[in-house]
Length: 161
Image 1: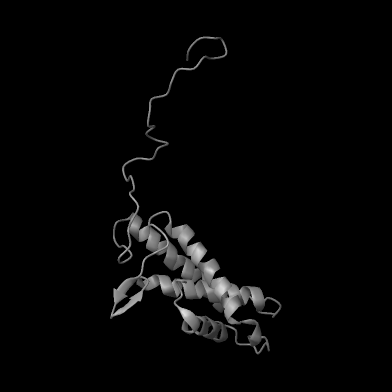
Image 2: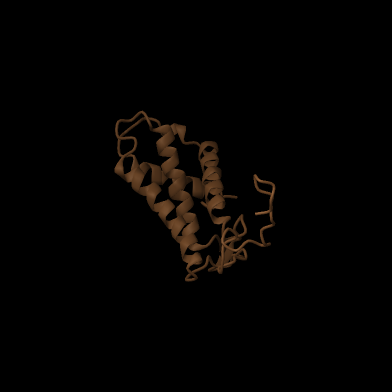
């Protein structure tokens, strides 16, 4: 189960995104089979889970909207953009404009959206629908407020400092 979606429909959407971004005829469309796309989808899911793990319990839960279960709004789009950009950067790297502005923009937009989800929660403005947040201490960092007072230690002259 990927954040991109389920089954062949999600795979076809990622391949379509790749086709829209790479405008040069490469003759390598057969490289993007279902197994390859699913592997890159799993990699994108790991990246998303790694970042969201700071705030939410992962993997995320689906929410029901319009009678069908889906992941919260920006997550599916972020996963598709990350998957497509990573596929292009990997399988079309020998093409001259392999890191075209469109691919860079796609990846940067996905990472920016993911960071915005995390930052918005930190500022208290927005949450992912239907997701359970981890408890956070907003009042002090452990490095500023130690949990126990420092204990005296012996200094170089043998006395307690």
